[in-house]
Amino acid sequence: DAELKEAPDTAIVEDETVEPLPKMLAGAASPVYRIAPGEVFKEPMTIRLPVNGNPSDLDIYYYSESPDQEGWYRGEQVIGWLVSDSVETVEEDGETYIQFKVNHSGVVQLGRDVSAKLGSLGVSATGRPAHWLALAALLALTAWAALPRKSLSR
Image 1 (cartoon, helix red, strand yellow):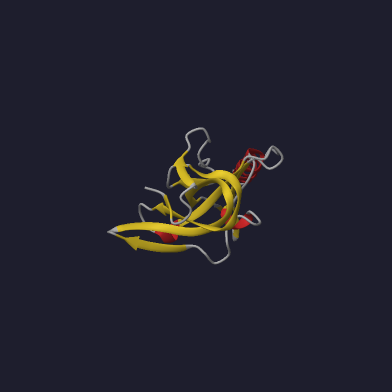
Image 2 (spheres, helix red, strand yellow):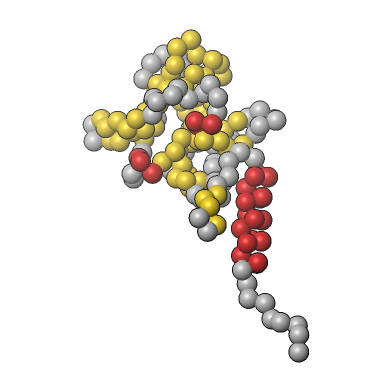
């Protein structure tokens, strides 16, 4: 189970009201969790999420519920949320966890990166669904442009 290592008045619970990571952004590798209460913590809070598989393949994702920024973002892209250099793998009682510190509450999920290669250019999307749609359109246009064409000349 996911757990907090401090502050008995703080909880981390599965939250089925938030849509999980979209497959175009990342492969979901955990349930969606809510860190509560909704506030900035006096001291950074240590969060521990259980891991299935290789923890080095996982990223921590944060869901912004703000109307202007709504969407999933990599945790390190959310200014002030994830404490720098706090992410580590912990093994306890035969279980593997990703442990990290956060400065405020939020919605979190572990995910495996999904990205595309366009030649030597790596492409991935975060944030709003419009970003994911733009990436899909770019990939479709690139694939269409690569199709062989019949000549119209005689």
